Length: 162
Image 1 (cartoon, helix red, strand yellow):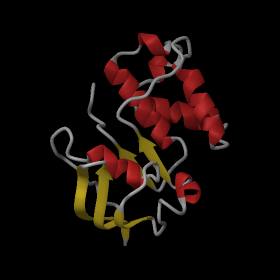
Image 2: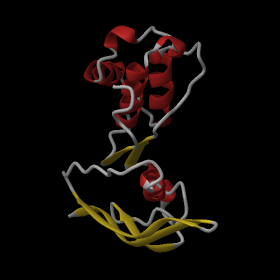
Image 3: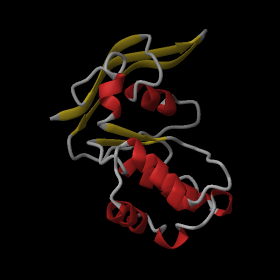
């Protein structure tokens, strides 16, 4: 079963056509990488998949939903890890994860600890955001993407800083 289907995707920014007729299918269980130079439209494609940016033409289906119409329903099924994110500097890793987990109604500390362990941040739970290295920030970002136990995870530039 395809979890992502894109047909003829077009996105324009004024006179610039960022995406010109993109076709893409990603099957369930597949790990898929979208590679290209800066300005190739990778982030634009990811943002359209998540329903964060509108498309000018084409069809997009993510987990059977149209992100432009069903963004709210899709947000419970898809986790998007952006290229970059920021938090209040004095916030600890544990506070960030707990706040994010509360958005999903997740309060089991065991699950949160398991995720911190999984991404290699269990020993940094008391570290303040401003003291994290680039790689640690990226691992925290991945941890946040996993909290809601999504059916689909979209990682934009996941290896930056790792």
